Length: 134
Ligand code: CO
Image (cartoon, rainbow, N blue to C red; front, top):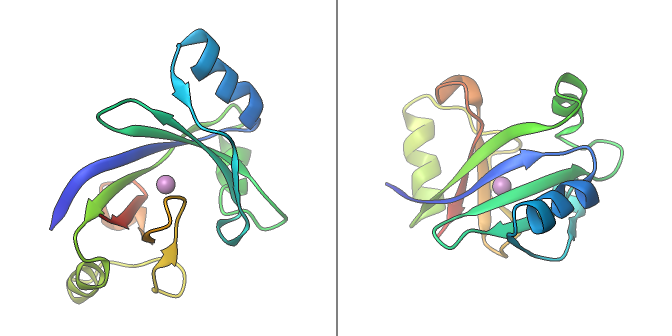
């Protein structure tokens, strides 16, 4: 069921500063910032060739990463995103096995224009997992 690692996401308090660290200090290729109001974040992707890093900054009042940044004020690793061929089939299989899907359980369109879902960290070795349709 599980495919490639699509990205590792890092929540940051200041997207411009974090982007500059990756671009200037680390010499990485970075995208322009993209606001995703439906997800409550603004994102920048770092293209590493074999995978990506997603930098996340809170957007709006009820950002899902606000509490994480209160606990980790300088930022930190927030989630990993794995690709699946069929996100609805993957969700149904995981739910049948007792895993918890966050939100209303329906895929939303993510930063790459493809459906995504988030799975409860307590069911996945303490890590928030995002699934993205490949
Ligand atoms: Co992500």
